[in-house]
Image 1 (tube, one colour):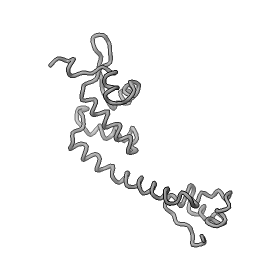
Image 2 (tube, one colour):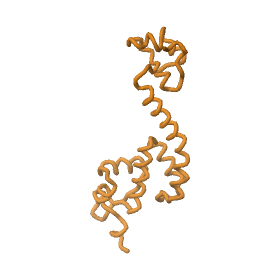
Image 3 (cartoon, one colour):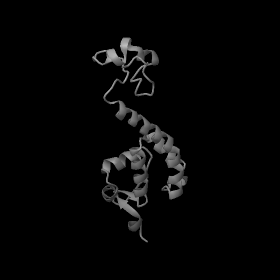
Image 4 (cartoon, helix red, strand yellow):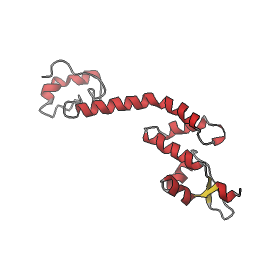
Length: 155
């Protein structure tokens, strides 16, 4: 098998991965993928980089930071592409974060039309749901969306 069969030009990899070439250059600069140069100085990547890019994109879509993704990929020897077993092991560790995000979004959806305990005191409803800004005693931010419960003074 020639090196032409095992390496992809940046444009081909970008098309197959569904990302811009600049994204691949960024991932490379961040140490998430590795490429090389052809004799003509064109950027090329091993074909298995396609699976690494897919891994990165899925990890980003579930909310992992680039630092989290870098740490996950660092557990793989020699910058290899994640195997199904690697994916299962790594994704198991992400489930609690995903479950917490789902719970947070569910609370947001369910409370979207009521007080969030932000302390704004500018809406007519705040006089009903958060009189005297009692939510402020619980901390800063949207206390009720963060899981705190309003006092029993709401109608």
